[in-house]
Length: 105
Picture 1 (cartoon, rainbow, N blue to C red):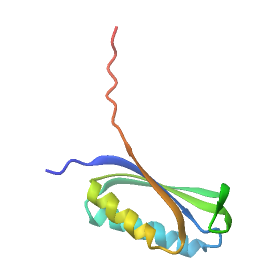
Picture 2: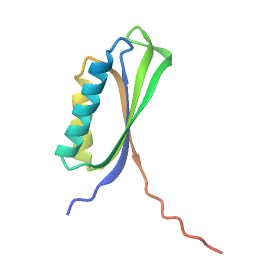
Picture 3: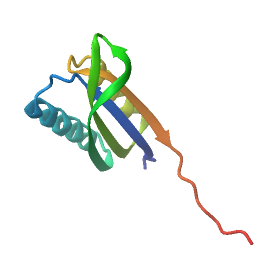
Picture 4: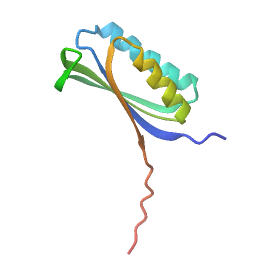
């Protein structure tokens, strides 16, 4: 049995990416996560936002947030794919710690 951790990946697309390209990237990454054993995939389009500083001459970017459960190997594969995608200017994955809340009186 493989234990799955909870992760959140946010990636920023170039501002000139079309809606079709955006949607196909989202579908590609969802399919990749599912194919490699990831679960509970939730994708949120955060929209176009102004960047705090310019990244490769871009001042705006389209933010996409993905929450999912997977193992570390899948995260590494996902980030490698994002690194080589010309439409993605930044990405970040964080691992969410599951906190069990116990009422102590």
